[in-house]
Length: 176
Image: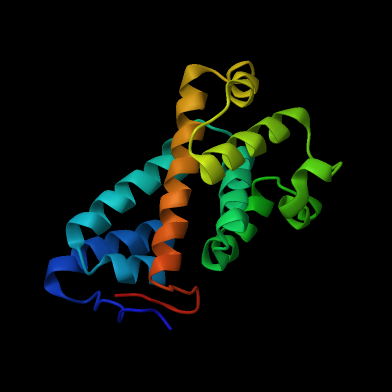
């Protein structure tokens, strides 16, 4: 049970935003139902996460690999439940999803994926990134992709921390 009640998404001050979320994502998931307690935060969140997920040029499989690894590290089941089907559609294999907890010992990841996972781990676990970990990213990606990768790791750490602090679970969503 979430630590706060979910906001009423039919309130006039959030109705247009709720309609936009439904149009873009199909329903208002619990994450957005909670965010709707603060319409400006919900609006900013939606804009930022839409840019990360739908407007970034970072390949979708790498984006979803990052999101799923952040979910594993942070113990965020909502994030994992929401993104596992997306990850599979983007080309991540079930074997990769199964091995995310021990990716460094798994044969299912290539060198680029390993570099991305090491970067994700460094940012998520330590905040600061060792020079060698960053060098492996820099040699594989353009500056735009480095920024988008970094923003993706940061964004989904934000998401998982919000979800877990407020004990938000995936069950149920509403259409306004």
